[in-house]
Length: 408
Image (cartoon, rainbow, N blue to C red; front, side, top):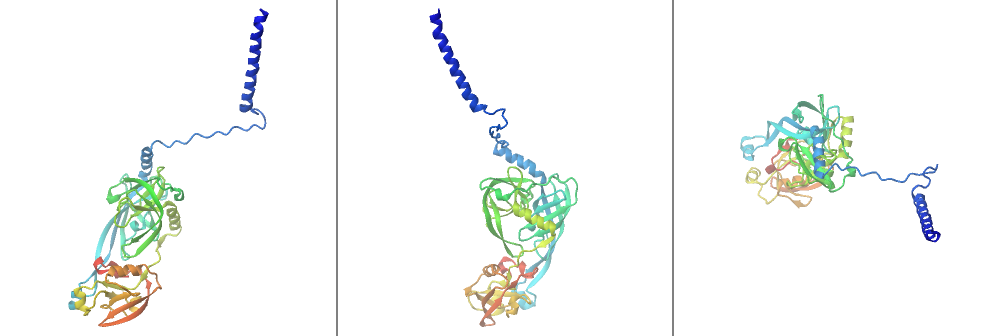
């Protein structure tokens, strides 16, 4: 009996020793200093934050959060427009080159609630008159619940195309949060909300396509402003979207919708980055008023194509050139001796026959630049050197139709 129990006892003893050894190893790796004064808890990774569901769900939630704070803006403008007179009427009836007539215009755009004081951010080209000689007679904000409120312009930065208007009304929707546009990534979702073609509360979706784009945009006055540092997005932006927010999937504003690529290309829109918007709005609120961009070069002539009427009136029989229909008193052209009826044959040794091409070339120059013009004047050719001035705040030349060129 004793001989049979001995092997069993030995096996049990060995098993106990091995088990105890394994438990010691486990305890040393899992419970070392568990209660000791120098105990350091193990590093534990936090559970990943919930993404809020699918991308579609996040976009829908962002729209629901943002939409109540996006407004429509209606603008009514009264002003004057300058209409060129036919050269025949000028010659035989002694009429002035231009006549003025009153006009009324109505425009619309978008904006969003910026703070709880009634401040609403939009584009400067939405909130301001389209022409220097015009004035806004009505500025109305329409909230998503169809509540209407009169607004007044607090200030605008024309070069940044940002304006702040203010409404005096209670129960404002919550202000939208501006994201840090420096942290945006190419390819992330971008959602445009606004009033394209006065279709209220329209939503389009795309991505952030690119950064730091420059886009030259011609204003209603004929001045070309090159906006720099713009966001490019594939979210469709249409007339009326201007001034509305471009938001991310969190509903935070990453930009203010501004324009589309010249030529109306599909899926290429531009927005002013939120960091630029924030800086500009802070400056406007600290210093209310209108901030103009640097004025472009100004020659001071109204340009016209060389058509049969111009030839009959002036006696010009040459080829090419651009006609001078009017000269602004005191301008660079006036000081250089240019007169209505002259023909600009060359500028800086380059020939021109299209008024718009010559106007565009001058618009890219700066005040103080010197240009050399070859002029035909009353049958004689001469060379003149002109020092370009700055475009004045208001001039009748700015409203010539395209077939008459635009006054540079």
